[in-house]
Amino acid sequence: MVRKGLVTSFLVVLVTGYWLLITIGNAWAGVYVYTDEKGQIYAIYQEEGLAIETREDGFDLFIKRLAEKHNLDPLLVKAVIKVESDFEVEALSRKGAQGLMQLMPQTARDLKVKDVWDPHHNIEGGVKYLRKMLNKFNNNLSLALAAYNAGPNKVKQYGRMPPYPETQRFVWKVIKYYQYYKAQSNALYVYTDEGGNRCYTNIFSNIPKGVSWKRID
Image (cartoon, rainbow, N blue to C red; front, side):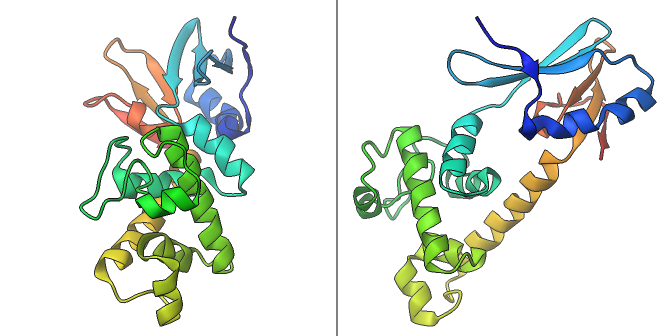
């Protein structure tokens, strides 16, 4: 039996948006979340008897738990995965980097990753490695990301960001996606679906294509 309760901290923006939703003019019955047997988090936005359900896709819940364990922002981990593999579980680079977080075989062995092609093992290894790079470079995000991409020895060799276009693009893209995810997590969107129903979501990708929508900050 699923559990239902008030929205947790990661959806707190939806709670703080109550007054905005009231201003829009519709009666507001409540916001609830529950977790299914697979650990997926679902959110229900209940309005005048109409329930709009959205889901945190992919590995968001696992990323959050693992990032918290290793004192990392889960949105940073998500940004790294986005740039490294675009969430393709079986991604394989020309240099041999594997999986969601593009772990090199030797790095995966050093991190004792049991199965590099298992997405959960891969993410766990990548999170550990990212935490290790942040520790090594005094939480300097740019240098830690550069080390994640090019290796820590290259960053130490130059004493700064290595002069490799690929690494520089990687760092820039991860930081940009990190900023995007942080901005998105603080946003609430309202749109009207094909049936004329007003729907609310804090996940932009859940908005159907071709419908009118508005961001509420």
